[in-house]
Length: 214
Length: 384
Image 1 (tube, rainbow over the protein chains, first blue to last red):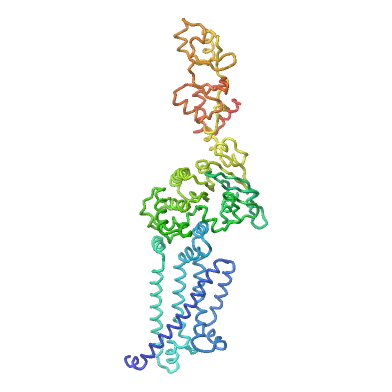
Image 2 (tube, each protein chain N blue to C red; image 1 turned 120 degrees about the horizontal axis):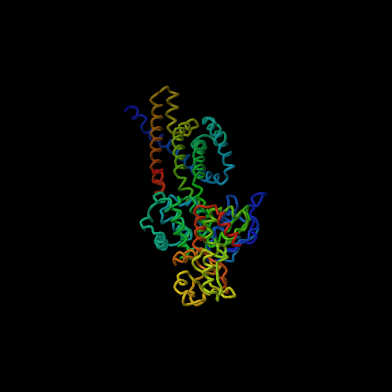
C-alpha cells in the first residue's frame, strides 16, 4: 500500500485533479445549457415532451460509442471527453428543470402575472426559486453519474482516473484498477454531499419549512 | 371608471365566450359578476387586466383604452385577488404584501411602512410580517392576498372568487371585513363569484351572466324584486325569493285592501253594528273622499256612547299610517315595535287603500320559515 503511494502518489493526485476537471467542466456546461433550455421548454409544453424523449434516445447510445464518434470530429484529448460527457449531463438537468418549472403552482404564477410581473421577473423571482429543489436534484444526479463515466475519458486520451483503470486492465494489476475506482467513488460521494449542502443553502427559507410540514 | 364597449372574446372559431358585452362601472362601485360556470364571468374580468386578450371591442379604464397600454404596467395599476390565494411561498408576508411595490422599485423604507399600515387594516399583528405564508391559516392567507392587491393603492381591484376556497365561517367573516374595508377605502371592485348569497351581501350592483351575455345588471334589491326572466329566478332560487320578500315586497302587495271603515257623520250606534258584523274591535274613519281621518276602538265607544252620538266626536285622530309604496321590511319593524294591532295603508293623498294587520305578517313570517310561498302568493294575488 505504502509502496503503491510511493510510486503512484503524485500521479494519483494529478489524475484525480484531471478527473475532477473533466467532470466539473462537463457539468457546468450542462447546467448552463440545460437550465435555460428547460425554462424555454416549459413555455412550449407540446414541443417539450417530444424534445425530451428525443434527448432520452440520444442518452441510450453507449457512452463508449459517443466517445468514439467524437474522435473524427474533435480528435482526442480533454475537449472531446468534456463534450461527450456534457451530452450525458443534459438529460437529467433538462428534464428536472422542465418538470420543476412546469409543476410550480400555477396559482402562484398567475398571481405574479396578475400583479404585473414581466416574464423574466416571473422566472427569476417566482419560478426558479420554487423549482430549485427539483433542479438541484437533477444536477446532483448528473454530477454523480458523470464522475463515474468520466473514467471513460481515458479511452480517448482525456486522462483522469480512468487511466489507472485502463492501465490496470492492460497490465493485469488489480491494485491500479482499485487506485482508479476508489478515488472516483469518493469524489462522487463528496460531490453529492457538497451539492446537497449547496441545495440546502440555496433553498428559500419559506420553502424549507413548507416542505417539512408538507 | 371602467367601461366595456361591445366586448367580445372568441376562442378559436366556436361560440364566443363573451359576446358583445356593454357595461359601465362607476367609481367606488362594488360590482359582482355572477353566473353558472362557463358563462364568461371570469373571462370578462381577466380581460380587464389583459390576462386574456380581447377579440373585439374596447375596455376603458379611467377613460384610457387598455389595449394602448403596456400590459405589465396596466396590471401593476390594477389590484388582483385570486381564489387560490397564490401567495409566494418563498417570500415572507411582508414581501408578499408589497410585491407590486418591489416591482415598481419602491425603497425599502417605503415598502416597510406600507406593509405595516396595511396589516393593521385586517387586524393581524405586525409580527406576522416576518412569517411565511404556510404558517398562516387559509383565512389569514387570503387577508394577505387582499392586502397585496391594495399595496400600491390601485383605484380598481379585480377579485376572482376570492373567498370561494374558504370554509363558510371564515368566508362570512372575510366578507364582512372586506365590505367594510371597501366602503372605507372607496375602491371600485369587480368581483366574480358563483355564490348568490355572497353577491347579494356585498354588491352594489349584480351582473348576472349566461352564455357570455349579460342577463340582468341591477341592484340586489331590484333583482330580487324584478328578476328579468326565468333564468334569473331559477338562479336566485325560490327560497331566496321568498326569504328576500320582506326586503323587496311593498306594503301595497300584501295589505288587505278591504278594511272595515265608517265615514264621518256615522252615528256611534251604527258604528257598533258595523263592528259586530265585521267582528273587529276598531274601525277606521274616513271622510267622503276616503281620506283617513282617525280610528275608533271599542273602548272609546264604551266610554262615550252616552255623551256623543257621532263618530267624529270620539275618534282618535292621532293615527299612524304607512304608505303603500313603503317596503314591508321597514314596516314590520315599526308594527312590531309599536305594539300596534294593525297599520292603515294610505296613498300619497292620504286616502285609505288598505290595512296591514299582525295576522298578515304572521302569514308572511310563516311563509319565510315553513312555506313554499304558495300562501303568500295567494295573498299577493288577492291584493292585486
